[in-house]
Image 1: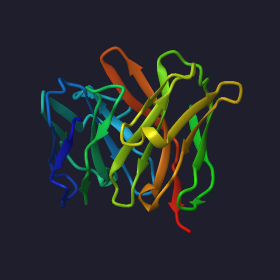
Image 2: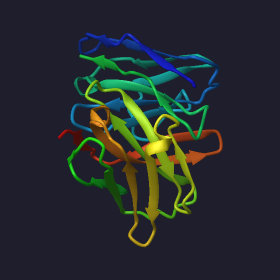
Image 3: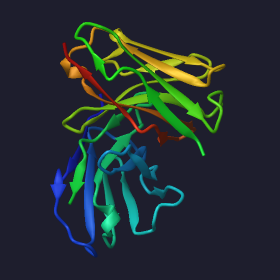
Image 4: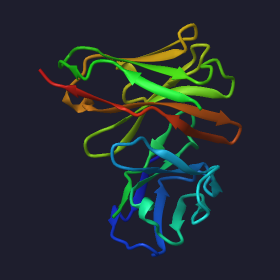
Length: 106
Length: 122
């Protein structure tokens, strides 16, 4: 089974900050990684697919990078609407999927 | 705009079967590039993929839930369903239905329902 970890588990930031969240896979998953944003009481929303491709409509302040086992999600200038929980999700083992434990940005 | 809506009981007794339905509107469930799936989120917030079903009935399950899980699809009603048997308190979670966009070299959950809280308790 492919296990996903994220760090940090939570971080405190301010509007305008540049923040980076990391996601690590237990084995090589190529670039088969997505990032989701979840706000309280809402379903997750895909932000980035295939490690670095921005989903349509997602602001360009979000970016993703990485391949193999190490990935990052960066928000270049944090906005008030970006305070949320962020999850990575691998699909290298498709049709089996695994999510990371999440990073709370508050 | 594609919409997904979960429905079913919010309270299930231990050892009984949890049954949920996801109704799809604004699009057809009989789409060649899409599977339909279930994901749950425990009170501790971890997201757990449950399984996926294709409109032709093909299914894929989380190995940890496979022995208790049934997924089905009804194309005439444009909905798909989940049954999880022998539930325990550990199955208490918010259950989401979602569309899996699955193409060569790419797979993500691009549309989600709002989620339904299911509590397992006597």
